Image (cartoon, rainbow, N blue to C red; front, side, top):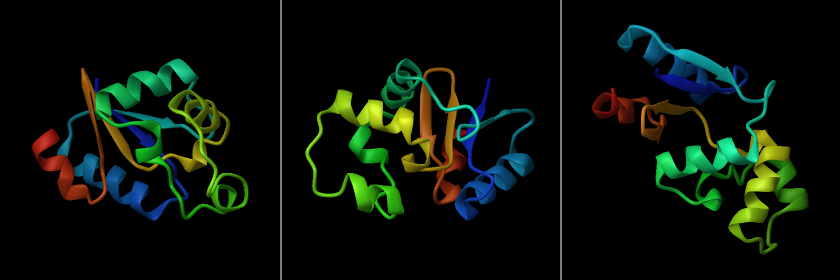
Length: 113
């Protein structure tokens, strides 16, 4: 099942959702701000993305600048932080089967779908 990890307040995420609506037959929308991912879910998603947790952090977020910028955390610590502050996760992320992709720009999704 195709899933989009979506933040309705984010312009890039809305663009990804619109693109999926036009291109995909069916998919599940996961509002990860309302129902944050667990640490285990984050680890699985990161494995599907082939990325470390630091690679999916939104460094322009105010909470990042105030609490985390310039500090050194290991991967496990970043996963705990991302589970607690899901707004730090890049979006949208599209997941299917055993892989996932960051959907910005939305054209990245063409080869994925």
